[in-house]
Length: 145
Image 1 (spheres, rainbow, N blue to C red):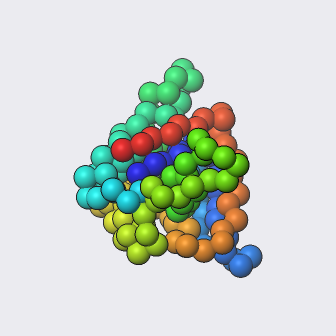
Image 2: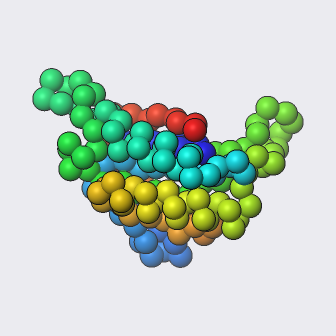
């Protein structure tokens, strides 16, 4: 499972020109699901994100987590994160989960975040989505579990 995490002052995702998820201050999570991802992967990434100190304190240092700043999370599925780009001029997706497995893991990941009392919005799995964001910092981290 790969998560590309961006600290945002706002973010939204639209499908067919209709906003399906939006947040204010918080984090945008672009989530790529691999074949091997399972309950353990979900636990590790969700717990990491809920505690990750990527928000600034009063001294401007990254000492606060999402809960401490009252932030929200927008989770958007992005299978291209699992692409193999090492060879040739076209990405390979052999590491990627099947659509069925990917959607199951994605939904379980969102449920896990919600069970950790996170305020979560989502995109629409498998849809052609347009994502808008204002990256705060910019601050971006990549996690692979």
